[in-house]
Length: 94
Image 1: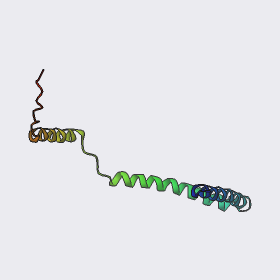
Image 2: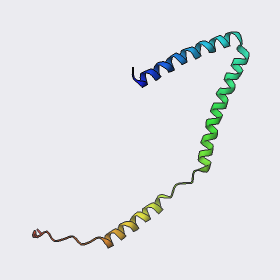
Image 3: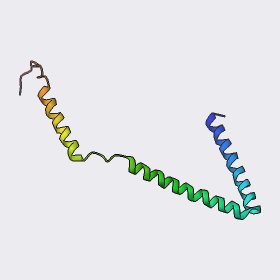
Image 4: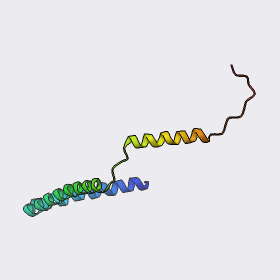
């Protein structure tokens, strides 16, 4: 078996064992297990929302398209002005 297949088998076995343990805990200790499960689920969702908010708050806004277009036009003008003239090919122009 390759490393990927071994890892997949380990994840499969761990998941099935996790389901069995969770089922056992819910059956015998239902209230506390359900409370912990609900807390972890809500905390996970809120942590993801906090991460999104942090990313939005700390990321600088993108440069407006108009400024980018101006820069590109200026670079094109500079490139045209500094371009070396092409060498004659010796072929007559049509």
